[in-house]
Image 1 (cartoon, rainbow, N blue to C red):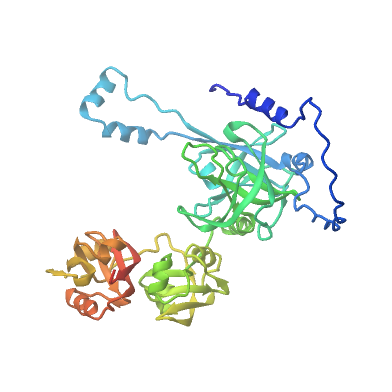
Image 2: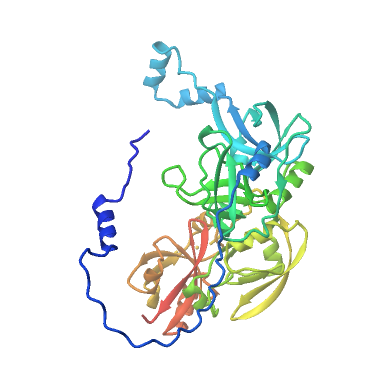
Length: 488
């Protein structure tokens, strides 16, 4: 453990403050008599403070703590994996291990620790998927030090949840609450086993709701400042009523330890996953079949929006529900199934909660006006992204500052684009300022498809001299709208 440093106020500063606040010993002349002041106006009563004290968590911990468990896992090393690693070594090392080392050193089993909590007295336990993923043995340890072998009922990688079952009865259970009514600024408390320290309690407040993380498209995370560390994963997040409102799942850290940002899976979503895992062992989610991006200020201007809002459709997957409903690249989805879509990250979360084969309404902004559509939501496939084709010479992109050439069929197939032109060179101009790179495929410009060099030149000739226009580019198979500012 590193050195513990104690930080104290400098003694001279403290003394100086005391001296400054005391009168001198010399007698001071009496002040001249002052005219009598007008009676003071009656002071207004001060308002009641919004915060009256810190909460006492002791009763909550005593009541709910016994239902929080430690989870340990063992993953056995496969002999075939070891043999495969041996075959990948250079010949010299293989001979060395065979002749002098008696073969490659045996690798130990992989062990991990996490947390969980009991949700039913007959032995169902909820935790994170990443705590038990690929485990060959799962052991649940209760606060009374009983250790029970657990069976994996089902797991959902998308939400990072796993449901376990132990053979026991009359177990202590947590009180399940709702995350819907949770408010930013509300006190919350976590119980878990950070770094293997059993039944550790940490507290803080909810710092945000509905957070999107880059690796999780379907979870509207609860963000807190509760101290969470490795080993807390899968443990419960309680409100002051002693109700579980979330499952501690992730932190953002540059060091691997807590740095002030913790994220929990909302309990309402988790219980829906639990019911599906109990019934079928897997989770079905709604699927629309679009790739979307955020609308920034420049893109909002280029699409005629009053402010940045909605989810901008950058690509529609062939054969998807979105394609059948008539959605197009350049549409900005602002409402889906009655839910306002403020940010692009809102859309996957809403779509994912809808049961497959349900018909829902949506509203998009298209060509500066609102358009209502109806879509039959599909079931999220293993890999919803699909692909397509194209053709050779080079041309100037004129006022855009681009040199382009027709795309070959292989280039379009690799980029998962149906048509477009390849950016051969980016010169000074709007395209460079917007971040266009060599190798990008320009798919559309000003909401008009770019099929080849000739169509691009026709579009460029009809662009306005001033203003902002949208361009759809495909980079490495990912379609993305950018805003080109003309005449600057």
